Image 1 (tube, helix red, strand yellow):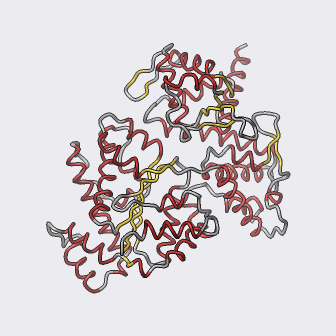
Image 2 (cartoon, rainbow, N blue to C red):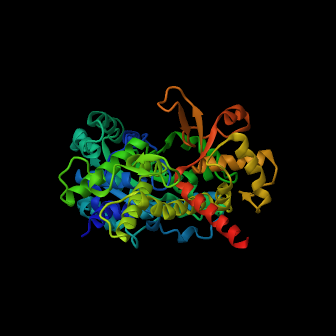
Image 3 (cartoon, rainbow, N blue to C red):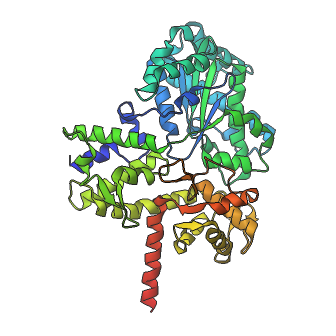
Length: 504
């Protein structure tokens, strides 16, 4: 195996599926893990985060730790739910009832398929006679709740400190994590865990009526946990989907206030990205029999590189961290692209030229992925992104505002059901709000407390920044195109220039 192949083994495509076989060796517990585990009694924890931020990895880690301690745990994905019974249902009340049935059916099936070893004695009899498909009567749901109680594990038989040590994996304070486990996971005398990933896939997101399916599932999970507090649930949801639920005027507006306290936004700050990078580099270098103290030197020709979009110098660590958009998966995929570029030129070391090659693909992929994420709200989002090839990557508010006022005159554009009009201040601000929410544009404001005398304000730092009432703040900020998208915009500039020259 070549050096670059070894590196790619620890930096695969960036999917959790590719990482699963390495999870025990590469996982780094995020600082927010205690908050994830602080599941309110009688309610689910709704873990919201961007695609690639690590939601699935946390659930996989929780599942592995619980399994090790023999805590009965079910891991569900949308494919586990048979939604045929609500395929043609449109009224909200029927969706709620139907989704609860579908959810409990998935739980019952998972018990038979994945926790059959726990079905002994009265529990086995109850499952076989009342819960298993083909043996159900009208009261099967009540019987299932009884079964879940029987299968739950007494918390007195679980060492909270031991479980916390497994979960922390030397990345967090075991003492703090043990307190959270004891106070929240062990708040009842018995415990049963249900983890639900990729929740948004139960619905077709461009169909507003389908969004009620998401509410139906969230309400079904909350109903189960409130009925039986021994059951602790963690549900994941993508950020743009949660925001779509908030904006959907035909959705369950009355439920939003009930769910807000249950929602936590998962972040991947730069320090976490750096830790993940260093951990994977160290493991890859060790496998390749590197005995030095700086693993990055084994795979890169220097610790510093030239930025593809300028003449500036950056450390590879800075470049990879800044290009990741606070998404570990992005960083992993970028290293994979770099290794592929170096291998294509038969090199054992990654250099600045490889960054330029890799970013051509990586940056385009990020723009197209972002267009998919935001496409439910704005089908023409990629065209808006592409329009910024005409704008400086760092601009004042007025420059950005005037550009966005002109965008709808170039192509038709809608945000939701609203047609975006040219030279309209309100529509320009609405576009800016969407660009800020997506992470394509970030605000940079002066801050003397910081080393560089400024700080960036991303959407999760201040979700309500782009508002008419905060006009003065918007004017004081510089607006920057995220570095991950700049190579793509430069490629568009070059393409336009080439076409212009050809015509001339």
